[in-house]
Amino acid sequence: MIKENVLKVRENIKNACKESERSEDEVRLIAVSKTKPVEMIREVYDEGIRDFGENKVQEIMDKYDKLPSDIRWHMIGHLQTNKVKYIIDKVYMIHSVDSLKLAREISKEAVKKNVNMPILIEVNMGGEESKFGIDPKDAVSMIEEAALLPGISIKGLMTVAPYVEVAEKNSTIFCKMRELSVDIKRKNIDNVSMECLSMGMSGDYPVAIKEGATCIRVGTSIFGERVYK
Ligand SMILES: *Cc1c(COP(=O)(O)O)cnc(C)c1O
Image 1 (tube, protein in one colour):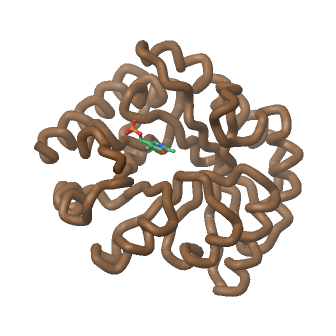
Image 2 (tube, rainbow, N blue to C red):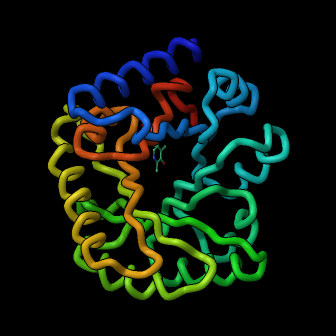
C-alpha cells in the first residue's frame, strides 16, 4: 500500500515536472508523517524517502530516537516559542516561522546550541483567518529584520493554501507566492536566499510544482487518511 502510494506520488511529481519543463531534482518530497506510527514511517523510509514533516514538537521528540539518524525532520506546524529549545538540534528546517518573536527565539536557541537553523517564513497567501502565517504585505519588512539575527538562515517561504475541491483553484495563490519570493530575492538581502518555496499538499502538489514549488508536503497521499483521537 505505502509502496504503491510513494510510487504514485513520485510519478505525479515526474509528470508535473515534465509538463512545466522543470528538473525533478528541483523538487523535494517531504512525507508528512504527523499522527502516523514509526513503523509506517520506516516503510516510507525504506522506499528511499529521507525528508519527513511533523507539526508537533512532542511528536518529533517521540519519534526522533526511534528512527534512523539520516532522516531530515521538517517542522511544518505552528511552533510556540517556549518549545523551540526541544527541537532546535533535531530538525533540519523550520517551515512555519510566522512571527519575528519566533524568529528571535529560534535565533537565541540556535546560538546557544551553536547550530545554524535554516528557516522559512510562513505566509498566509490565501488570507484565511483560520490559517497561520504573516500577511504577504508584511513579508519584506519582517524578513529584513529577521535576516539580521545570528544562528538562522532564511531559505525561503512556505504557505498552506486553502482546501479546495479543484486543485487548479490554488494556482493563483502558488503563483503569487513565487512572485513574492522573486521580489524578495531581487532585494539581495544578506542571509536571505529564497531557494525554497514550500507549497503544495496531497490535494494540490502537482499544481504547486507547476507554479514553482521546491518543497512539497505530502501526507495523506502517502500514509493514507489521518485519524485524530
Ligand atoms: C498536514 C499537513 C500537510 C499534509 O497534508 P495532506 O493533505 O495530508 O497532504 C502539509 N503541510 C502542513 C503544514 C500540514 O500541517
